Image 1: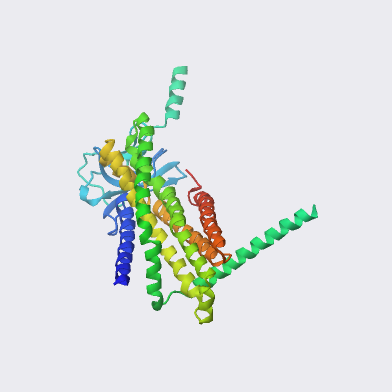
Image 2 (image 1 turned 45 degrees about the vertical axis):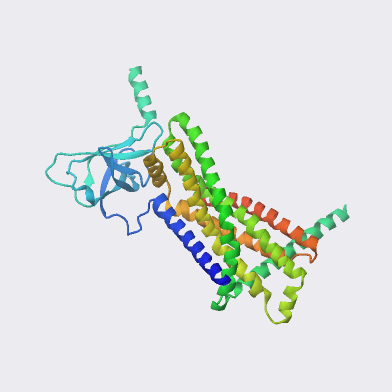
Length: 151
Length: 260
């Protein structure tokens, strides 16, 4: 009888520990256990993506519709190549959809905001968004301002 | 002058010898992997070490989570950045506080008990009578405790994190009025499974090895007197705490060293 209580409580303890681990993985880090969400990926080239991180959100009209999958650099043109994953539930995006690197709040992180296009045709998996605007870097802005004031 | 050097050398040699004995004992105990016949022994130890530590772990976790939330909130509210309370709470807990505090509690609650138990067994010559009966005390007494510690501490750490995040949520969301949506989404955006949760768990596995090793060895190496047991128990808690805190710094440096 005594041994049974021990066994039951050990079982409950191990189970609680495993449940806690799953909770941490799913609720806290937001990992999708079921093989990840099925989305399609799009490419976008920016002249500057300072402050943008992988896993940053991709929004349209303020609604999160995807994530930044990876960021790499094209050294030849000096451009950043950003791969976006857009969840397939969003519906098709027009071919001339725009992408902009924007800042969340005053101290917040950078994310990508998509603006709707008007084209009849739609972006397919692996297509490139051509209408892009990179991050506004404060130092550059101030530099421009100083130069134009100097003139 | 030479006397001083000699004393120093003797000290160093005896320390080295102790370390060697501890390593040999540890390796020998872990060498025989637990077989099916050892499951009841292991069960009993998991109960003693893990289940009985649950209450203290949960209580401390709740209050630590609540305090961190409160501190983050009061500082971040000055910049209007209350929405990252959740992220700060989760990262401090998963990366540092859960593994470290759980290991410290574990050393105080379970490590000292292991040392006292094995020390008393040695003092009352139970260990040597076991050897006479042909039962290997390393296999029968030491190994189940080492394995139980290795299983329990990571699980306790995970439970600690969850309870602490719950405590933090109660304070931040229910009491201070942080928006629950930004609290959780901030947490989910910033926490990565491998980098934060994985490394935290790895830390707790390493702490488990160190703390159980120290506890078991101190018990096994006790001077067989009542006073000796007391000293050994104290040494377990002191050495484990120092080892955990020092190791934590090194591990953090290795795991999260390249801050970008």
